Image 1 (tube, rainbow over the protein chains, first blue to last red):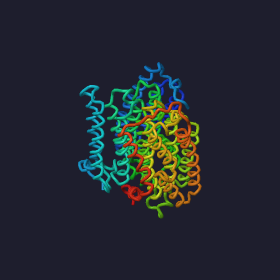
Image 2 (image 1 turned 135 degrees about the vertical axis):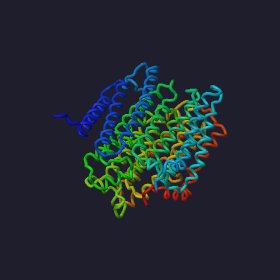
Image 3 (image 1 turned 90 degrees about the horizontal axis):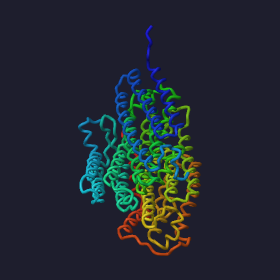
Image 4 (image 1 turned 180 degrees about the vertical axis):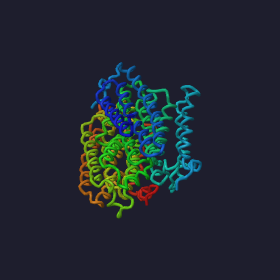
Length: 104
Length: 498
């Protein structure tokens, strides 16, 4: 009996990735780890788009979105890393909790 | 009718012009290193003016271009004019800013980012496709992350940009996940197709609810509505004043434009009669108007109450801008044409008074080297004209009669009363009363507190002229607001509605 992989399996994987991403953003103190969490969320959405385009409704727009999202994720990561690098040079830390000069 | 791709280019000339100017501004970094500080500023300003000429030709155009990706209609036209005026004013402010002159040498990059943010805002105002919506939102966001940390030797600006990029990337990621669910439910990315699919009523209510909440996170972050506002005070305080002023108008207005278009086109039962009653028919189990009303009340109340304790001027204006997002959301609750035209009119008022207030804050920071309210002590004696102008802007923000802010609020409340949201109008009025306290606190500091030293500090002729240019419409439009009102009323038209 062959193992059938359908829409549901993809959606479950994406939901797990999405939850892990949120967990990483909330629990991690290291800015790079937070970035990893954000990447997980974006990729979870990507899996959704591609799975829906493949199994759900027969149009390609989902796959097109995924391509755009990959590019945007790279741009966003570049900007975030540049900002974190600058923070590290100025304050000598990448811990988001230690960057709290502005009053709350 | 949808246009072919080739024909579509005729409708995006302003955006094309801005893109070219973006590259030109960036190229000025290569020539004459460090010598021509203002060259990119002049190019940027010329670009805004040329784009303005092309935008003015689009008045009354009502088209959906690029296979339904982008709408060029009176509604987006209104916002484009707002973005261009803001862009020109911000370029002028930036040329006078001491903070930027000392904090950075990379003027070409600064002005090109101002332009790219404006391009993103243009696309946000017209986006009628979920992909377009996400891309334009990210174009605005990424530009603003870099801008808010632009003076990168200043640790406060660094912190602002770090907080901004983490909040922003997280909320737009959540929004993207919401978009992916919506795509799965409806099988289309187009707002109009979304509406048709939802109207057939086959979608699962719970899934739809999850998707909409996730979308609201992304949009709520952009307009800094409570509870997605946490980044606002820190970013507004840490970023350079010119950038704060820019974000508080352009980025927020673009967020509202997208919010209104997304909900109005995607989620309104167009067939319902009367249109007002059938607004949210698709969600039968949920009263969405009440949820937005609660969001609006929370936003303005939290904004106003927390502002009471602020001692930093930029932070105070940040909370005040949160409160103003709450006022503007009140018009969204009604979702009638009258409510939306009141919102549009309020944007004109908000642009004038908010940019004016930030301009004076920047001038005071230039000459007095302070952003604290205590530093404003005796400003009324030391720089009488600037103090008077700031008082006018602050009273306009409060909504006190001889200013345009009053007319803006009046129309918002009138729209609410007409749709029987009297309780919401009362909350709005009470909030305005609370806001009077902290705005008046600044005025009191300027006129009633004796300063430590008494030397007069005068600003140049150009600066005084600029203050006058910003101040006159704040008062003149109170007396003669008919043109703005009729412009706002014509601009509620979106492609495919009416």
